[in-house]
Length: 299
Image 1 (cartoon, rainbow, N blue to C red):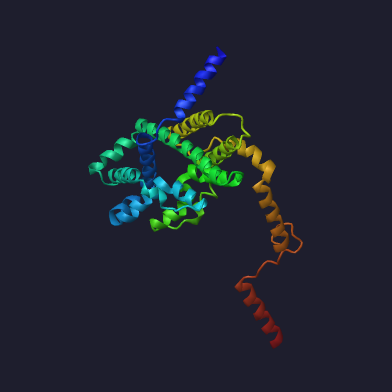
Image 2: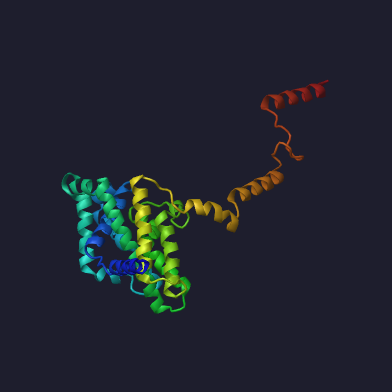
């Protein structure tokens, strides 16, 4: 019975990994990606005043992962734009989300039950892109583990790693929003997924690629749908990172405390500092003292 269940699970995973992404899953990916673009402050005004810039931002949201991966592997960065069907489909989604009369299309896809379906389908595309990116990098660099991880990571993260470039196209410059400094859940999950798929590709992880795609997709779909339904910006990795990161990299608060103590001893402004400066005198006290000196000299 266990063997039959294992066989059925393996067949399910294999069949799932062979499901074509175009056009249904890619359509969901484009819808959710451009929805996030419309959520950005000033995106609607940009589409009215500068539609070409808005379209370029939408294409970055849809195909930024391919551009970054081609850049890493030394391939033409506009190579994916030769795929006319995907470009036309993404452009149609962009137009409907921003310019549909009465925002009917936007209201339909923003309806939470519908949006959750699209979000789940987008995660299917994300995991497949990670696996394909690592397979592509492995073809060029057979033993380049870090290259495979980096390629899979940018394939899964998409435009988030290019957020500053996308903001520049919208006339916004916010370097503090760099995704490397403040990683969201999809970016972290793409990194961890890239590590797992690299281990599988180099045969250090004894599991088939189809099974890993199925298992990791189920994980991503469950987490992302839950976070979207609850409007949460937290990450399932936060609890684990709260325990692991202080052990591996130290506590940030401890470093700040040491820095503050060091600064206090140098500046001498602490309450118990032996070199604390004397209290400053007010203008009235200084003028009073100068008058007394003048009186003594006159006497």
